[in-house]
Amino acid sequence: MWNKIKGRFDKRRLVLIAALAGVALYVGWRTGGFDGQPEQKRCVAGRNEVKDDKGQVVQVTRTTCIEEKTK
Image 1 (cartoon, rainbow, N blue to C red):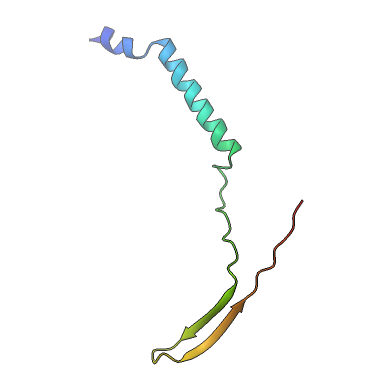
Image 2 (cartoon, rainbow, N blue to C red; image 1 turned 90 degrees about the vertical axis):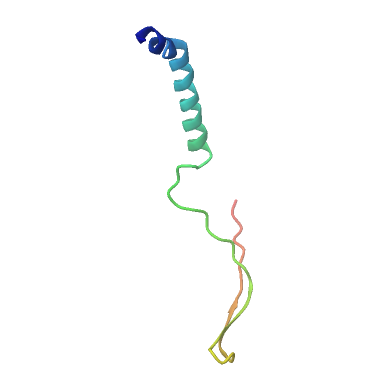
């Protein structure tokens, strides 16, 4: 039984698993997969009306988006 289990964990297989884990970590690091902050939502320009229970407009909010140019 031990020979059967020992055959599953030979050196080549462990090296292959460690190499795949290393590649996965590197790709996650380089693509920003480990950043703690999610991407910010894009600004959506427009008009938003808040209505009460009767259906009458109580508040109107207008959103204007300003694009920031970064170099």
